[in-house]
Length: 114
Length: 109
Image 1: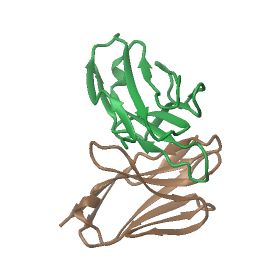
Image 2 (image 1 turned 180 degrees about the vertical axis):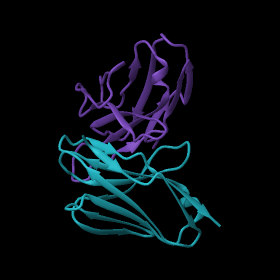
Image 3 (image 1 turned 135 degrees about the vertical axis):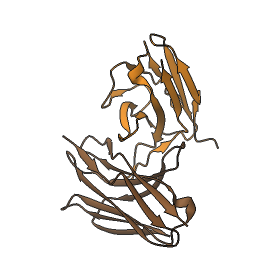
């Protein structure tokens, strides 16, 4: 069982380019999330999806878009990358029910925008 | 606004006990989580508290006081592999997690 996979592991991108970060989970979790992690700051939620076919905006959604066509995949797209989007991006999933609803994280994508 | 506060960095000795504190001010409360994150890796779940009191899991324990907006993570019998960042997160009224910046724990031999 792989859990959550993310691709690519790392990427250097020129400003203005379009980029899609991929996230796939095999746990049949209903909910999925995208976070960014920057030095000195807590994880910040970009977008989330409570179930396939629905998405919602988190704390820092500007410049990012997501889709959730099926249960397993939750890609994050940067339409026109800017240097302030340099960060480590984590995808997470949870089963969306139960008292705990623990989030489980993928290994992350380290993105540098020049 | 919503706020989670934790110390930036702590140092402890192998074999000792360390307590990492977390205070929070959030719009609503639906549980508090502790995660461990080794450098360059993903956060991994450690503990969950929703009721006041102490939850014990092996060498790790987590305490919650909802009236004080306070939690701590207690690590006993410290090992070198416990060197990591420890993240506190609160689930708010929208059922979203609000994260602290994390506490970097350095273990010395």
